[in-house]
Length: 295
View 1 (cartoon, rainbow, N blue to C red):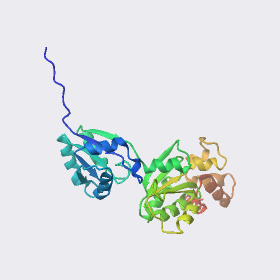
View 2: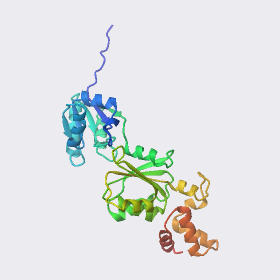
View 3: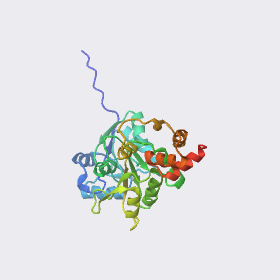
View 4: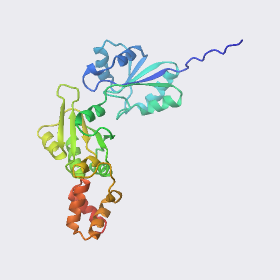
């Protein structure tokens, strides 16, 4: 009887390795083993990753893979994977591909039939979420806000009605502008600002956007920041609404909401005040929306 030979894997393996976001003790035993066993480590910053490898006496060769060379390096790494090489992809901190390079390489590997293996571990977003004290049952990760003021404002305005807890990353030199924008668009909604997570000077500030802005304005902000912001539903629960119940006005725009109250005989000034309170928005923003809507 002829027995068909078992097909051997004709490709290598791409490992997605989560690395510490600060404290080196957070690296998993599995990640350390894979970093030792692979043929190559593709790192966002080879100098940063070399410190990690040296700390654990790992001598695996390194190559760079970052935002500015990914177009050129992705085909090169895919070619090596096609030659049965095993490659570990790492970012400077956390899981590669989350606000860091990695998506293009993963997509290319999948299309080529190359095995992709995730190695879970540290995540700044989830670490900030669970320590924030805000609801964790439903949340959305929004990454970095746009750098340009107008686009940042527009991005937050699109999220003004979001009912899930929101998580943002922010650089230290932009965190004050981000907090000011959050205060302008969301009002004094509850949030947590986490910086230097798992490091010596870890800090988690809990309060409102205005309180956080005052706190971090006292000295130049340092470290990487995560902003965790309460969703509108949580804000509404503080105002006496029944959680999970859709209100009549939720299907209206801000301007339509004001017009709806005015049609009921409420003065425009009072209608603007009420809409701002219900939606957790600044009164000036509601007023401008009402003017644009012809109210």
